[in-house]
Image (cartoon, rainbow, N blue to C red):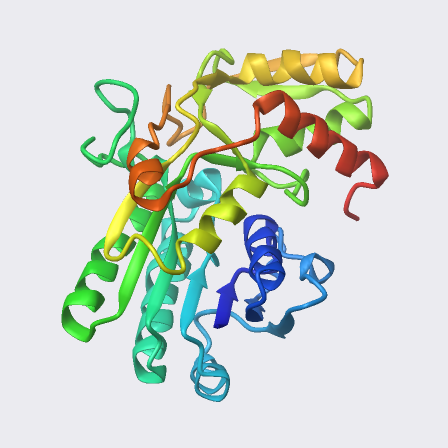
Length: 310
């Protein structure tokens, strides 16, 4: 089928575009290559076409009309919690108005379905763990708020226009191609510092936890979601809490280098713990994570050892 991947030159989107191409689909990648977004032209898989375009651009309509996609995998976003806290207006402009432009354009072009990159951050600080689809969404950062709002827009466009969707509420995705110089993605940031034999900054006390999911497992999920999960939202994780301090210790084990540490105050919008139970995704989509944290971190370190992005 014909698929447009927005944000497909970015970290997660490029893995998904690659998986779609490997499955035999015809893929166009749209990406603004925003400096803070981590999009890189050389991330685009060889089997995909690339168009340098912002999702807020009105030129989107021509691309959709000419390509006539059946599915849009919407992974373009302002993805940094820290940037969203500093600049909520920018965050909403990209993540809400950009989404609406994509959805309006998709309706006009007769797109069947949108596969949407949502976030486990929409749940905020839950009263109990693990997080499931029944957990109330109480987002605590502008980024998380926009992801929750986006899901409501998806429901509206399905009810009003018949545009189907599947929303995937990712845990913390990590793996090759993640930007080690950005403000989001502690594993990539730490790996960049470890391999350069530099110190790392740990916000809060380092005992805050996240549910880390390997990018390859997310790519496989997005192939499945092309034809499953109609009109549903799914929590996507490993059902495991991992602290920042454990990430540090694991990287010491993998690299053999004990990076100097500096502890700093808590960042605005950060939550204490996250753990996502993907039982519903396993039941309805037939998906479950395959890659352990140690395996994934070894593969990611191996990727960055070849050469950090310039």
